[in-house]
Image (tube, rainbow, N blue to C red; front, side, top):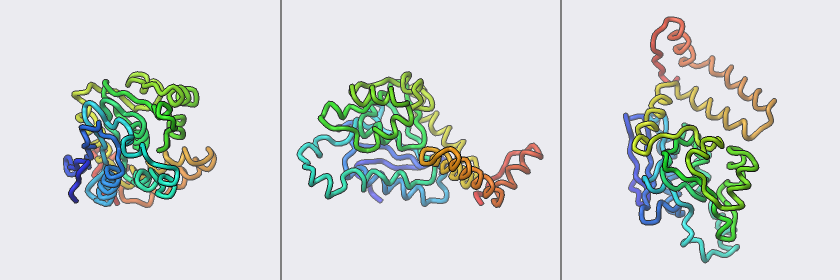
Length: 259
């Protein structure tokens, strides 16, 4: 498929890399870009050779928000009848393989929300996060008021959403929004290394682990633990479990077949 607003390639034949590519707009997330992003993620998810997906932007901006120019004249009828955001932005929730956000520069508004939809965020030391929608007379509309409190707690989320201020990478890591901070010139190297490590494991176990962690945000503790327990039990039916444990016992590298 040919893309206009993203660039797509693979690394080591195992990692799908998607680069947001609207440089003049600081990678503002237009509906057309989100359609392309969803299509690329879906294609990588369906490719048996791909074990992990990375979404990144430019050094200056991961994504500086949704496309305000495109939505400035919308009416309530426009956004409600067309289900604005929902039908284009929610594709990432159906992706079963791990998705890493490699964030440098601005990740604001929709950009911050897109990063939070990924499974974890590796941030360059120049990264800036925020939900500044309040400055436009609106609120976050792609999960910012829901995912941000789950990541950083109510007080920090209220601060960011109500003031519209940005927080730097150090504050984002302390708050729990990002998993690690790396130098800007090492961002893709470190992210690819993390992705390669994930790809070295059983795809079945990796997808099951992702599903179980995500379940913790959708259910109570007792239901979540029971879900985890049943997935744990089920993995004993896989060849990869036999291979992994035999390799451990015999002190040799595991050779997972994703079966």
